[in-house]
Length: 144
Image (cartoon, rainbow, N blue to C red; front, side, top):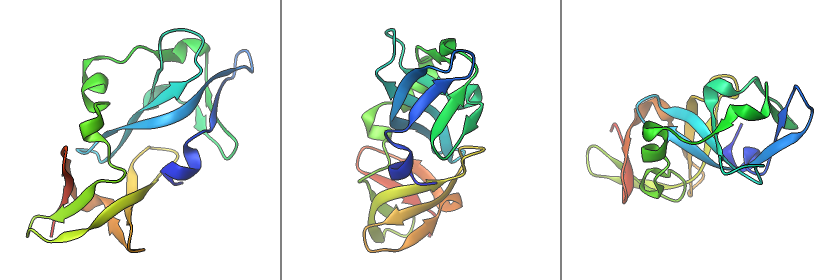
């Protein structure tokens, strides 16, 4: 699945069959590399973070969670990674050899694990996500 396909998807609680939020962003950990949490809009309370471990299923039409309490306030690590400097979309990609490879326009990820499969670039190319080393405020760095 792609970030662009998942953004805007409803998150539904299976215990009440109600929508608890809508996916607006992805909190990523470049060490995995993968998604560790989702940021939601239109939640009932002030909390807006859904940890990947709280997801029951990431389906074609909706993401399901066991209860609405699965949506929570971000802990310190999630809040740190949710910082905009850790966003991957629209970042330049540089190799460890110093070559500019393009700009990330989308990310392919595994719906079951949240792990990245590929970074899709503006030139139509793709980079295997296992090459991702880090994400900074200016660029994402990948192994040459």
